[in-house]
Image (cartoon, rainbow, N blue to C red; front, side, top):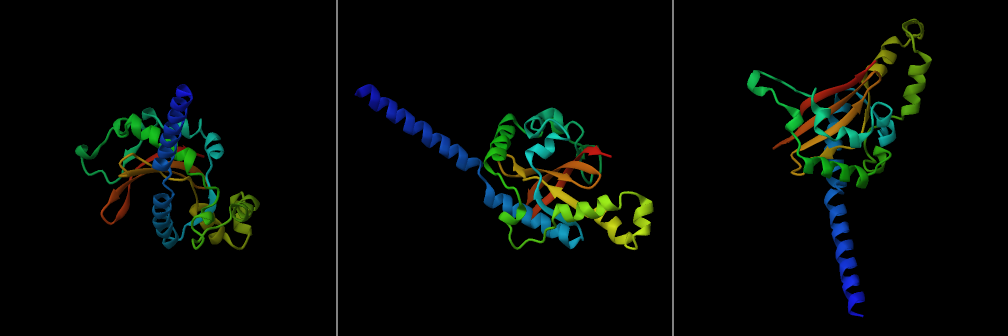
Length: 208
């Protein structure tokens, strides 16, 4: 009886700890607040933000998945924006700690969103299929010029944006987001300031 009671107490303690860990990395409110502000800026600049969220499977097509992204070597080629002198240069392989990476992996598991409309119903988003159809139909410069909508098609190709969920460091002072456009994919790093989140650094992951 005593052993059974000890086991039950241990089990309840373990479950409580597990749930606490989930709550700590389930950051949907901050995630939505962050992306909502970012999307508003993009829409004001005329970009076309796709409603579908970039998934783990989508990222695997370009690399080995997010879990392999989340290690120091990934950030070797990341460059700080607005560098004014040598003192502004940063070694981003030492930017995040092992704890930060573990926290990001936890967020990736707990903050699953398939479509931005699920958490931002009033946001302005575009369906990927409708834009893809236009781009696929006009996949050469000759076809674009013959379409009669040259500027609109070129604009759609240049302003199309897909986004993954943001992943925050443990202090919630920085966030990384994977952005994919028609011909490239980049890892973006944002830093929290008093007036919101600012673009801080960029890693061009692939280009075609």
